[in-house]
Length: 395
Ligand SMILES: Cc1cc2nc3c(=O)[nH]c(=O)nc-3n(C[C@H](O)[C@H](O)[C@H](O)COP(=O)(O)OP(=O)(O)OC[C@H]3O[C@@H](n4cnc5c(N)ncnc54)[C@H](O)[C@@H]3O)c2cc1C
Image 1 (cartoon, rainbow, N blue to C red):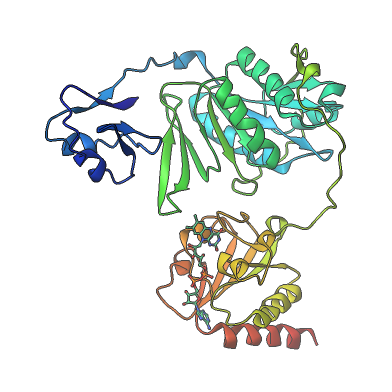
Image 2 (cartoon, rainbow, N blue to C red):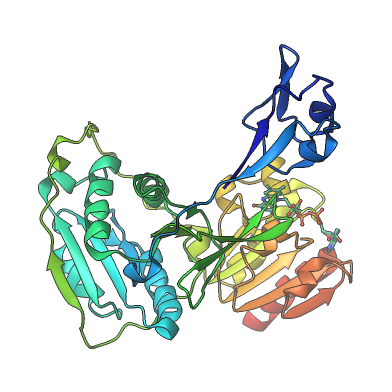
């Protein structure tokens, strides 16, 4: 941990520190510098000060004993009466990560009447399924759910806790990380586990310009959220294994400060994340009406259609059809991208697809770095040809 300190007796109030700061993090108050919340502790002001009145102080942080934190815990989310598939993807990833260093995978289930899901989880290679089953947990109330998972973490001491980046998970994980005064990395796209149990949490940062590797070096547990469809679903085992551990509901859960007034079920909606075949259009399309050929090709292939962000910004499609960091992650068996350049914010959320066919006039378009089949050409010629040939084959 580091912070910037100003030695007032040495400071002449020249303001060179404030003008040198690239983050606008220094305010001059009564002729003296004061760091504001934008300070990144980069130390540029330390170098800029001619009086050596600014210091970067490093404080030693005591590390936890990492050997006391073992195994990987996956929060098994039950919402809308089903086990969310992201939980199974995370179990698969956790098994892959934990295997080489001898970590088991455990899960925690919270809700009402969740016992059947605990039985189902015994088929997914976990060593323990902790269950908090109570009428007071029938709806997701963040404080009550967090209290249950906190209780289990204090009992089991997992080194890593993985949570799906769903609406529920995004509400739960930060509360838990705060309760343990530890780190949380949201929306990881890749995870690695070092031999010393440090979890390398990889995700795009600074608008997707870099892939940041984030490590929680001094505290445990290490919390990470991962979106649906980023990791692979493992194979379900026909054999059941793993202990089901019924846990006592922690005191105070019934007295949650959140009360549920009513629950309105959202009508089930098809998501591009669930599509097996996708045809996606980008800024290579010249007008909104041209989206119809993307839709027609998708429908002929029995799939769904999607877009890159510029088309959502133009109002040609809703955000639920957008692939990318600020849209959905997709992993279909086949995706055909038409007139999409392949910016990292787009590509990072579709490059796990089984087969990627990309149509672009620019042979150097970055999309061709992730495409399995590259078609250099005009989508206005290629897409109608594809449509015509499929129709011809079917007549
Ligand atoms: C924080 C942040 C988050 C973002 N999130 C997302 C996101 O979620 N999703 C997303 O998509 N973007 C996102 N972006 C934007 C992203 O950086 C790109 O700007 C965007 O993906 C570009 O979309 P595009 O490929 O459709 O357009 P362009 O980059 O303009 O590419 C158009 C492509 O079409 C090709 N082309 C043109 N005419 C034809 C033709 N007739 N036939 C074939 N090819 C043709 C061109 O050669 C070009 O490669 C984000 C950006 C930031 C900073």
